[in-house]
Amino acid sequence: MTINDVSLLGKKILVGVIVTLIPFIIIFGGLWLTKKLLSENHKPEQVSTTSTKSN
Figure 1 (spheres, rainbow, N blue to C red):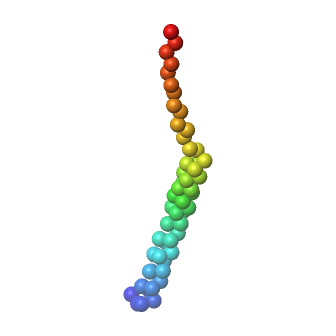
Figure 2: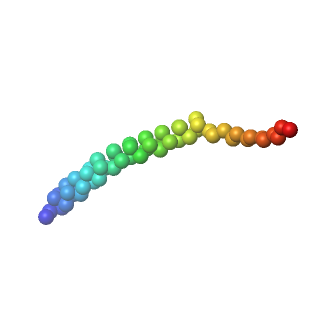
Figure 3: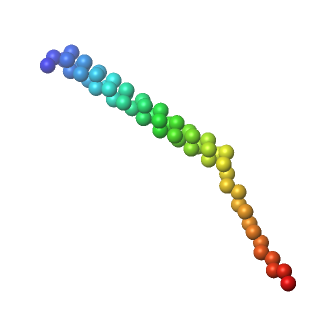
């Protein structure tokens, strides 16, 4: 194999890795953003109850 062959093979592997990672980044980034947006808008309320005895 010549240097040009190794260089071309390396470029193809690099492009394959990038093409594979981009969808995962988009999916997990979207899930993280959705979770963050929903957790900011939905803050649980604390409800306290008092029991009274009536005679």
